[in-house]
Image (cartoon, rainbow, N blue to C red):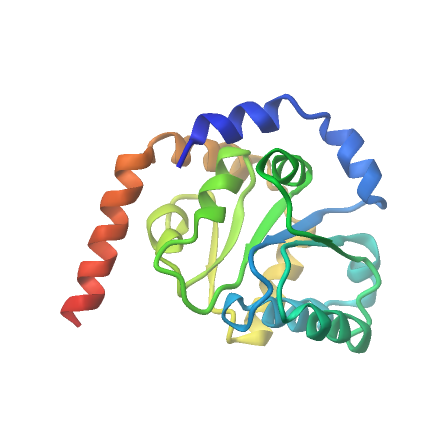
Length: 204
């Protein structure tokens, strides 16, 4: 994990310009990953669909990635009445950094991930994370650190309530904490944490 790459890339980007190109006001909730079932994007979409109509109008969802579930996700967006959702496809790292720089929140709803490097990437760009309990990065980087919140994406009501809180929350402190936490998590720290998590799973 090259923290410096993401820090330098996000720092050189005109955040306001990118946000204007995405459109609208309010917060930008970003999700990044393969559009496949185990990544939980459908759970995110369903939880977002439960938000009050005004919050869905005022805030934005941006989904970065490609995969077989895209058609399903677009269908959910229509059925759930989600007006402000943008699918931008897979992005090269330099372009992905622009989306991280523009985002207010990374939503990471994965149902199974030994780690989840997008959490590292977002935090290096100063983005707090609403993270699934089913990923190693959530346990190591988010739980109890002040850099985000750990949720169960399978609990749709609780997931939606968390999204609702974050729509109106002041995230400035969490943005600062995200950077502070990731600065102490270099490549070796991440690898050792992954090894420890794999060993824990093997021992069970």
